Length: 328
Ligand code: TRP
Image (cartoon, rainbow, N blue to C red; front, side, top):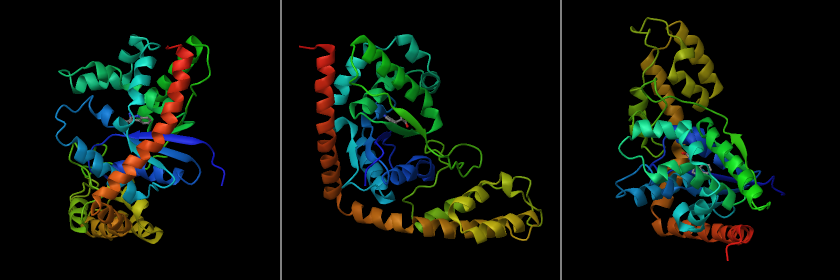
């Protein structure tokens, strides 16, 4: 079947993925494989901009690969690889930095946020983060980049950088990527307040055991106005209900929607039901993950093969780029 074009996306090696990563990115990566030629990259170089202690970087990269494969990335057709395995990206990053006004980088809201988060480690690489991201995208001549809305300024930056490069060197070798906003199935963390994230420890890991998953679901914060079992609740503001809508059959969603409002079902019961449905959904992922985890060499082979295929594209682009820049 003819594909609609090439998709590229990068995901940071944060270790084991959680439900937020899954619903916000990974599930969409999997679905896009049906219509696009996909290139997915675990961005370990980007991780270096914020991670000082790299002791766990390899393991975290491996864990992320396991989760991507478990979720349904098909490595025969899709190129799945690790960013640093294709060093051409660093050369392109350097060349693109020459058409990047520094002020544009320091003005980005994402950069300002990082400065707030890590005031003692405002390194050069951190400023250049969007340039490296642009290099990722254009090196593989991606048409479409699926990302969350928080990354929108970076995609806009990439588009401007492509225009600047093509204009300065009077060429068309780089392609302006389109952003494809991932349809958001936003779940909050188990605190019911913040976005799910590892650093806040409010997450549920994709690879957690059924017991751990159930325990985490039982810790979820529900409608705070519902204090006693006999108090009616409001599912519209309850994160447990949001998850029911994602993971439970419609009959359960309808039941909770009615019974919560009239205190016909308690929060504990409601969570037990969610945990059951969530575990059912995750069961095949866990099985697949366990299979890959038992074959680390296979995972390594997949990533090496991905890098090899990625490099063929990358080297061709770099030849065109060097020619356009007239590097001798
Ligand atoms: N910056 C992205 C994030 O934080 C990760 C990323 C790196 C990326 N390179 C990319 C995403 C290229 C899309 C395309 O999530």
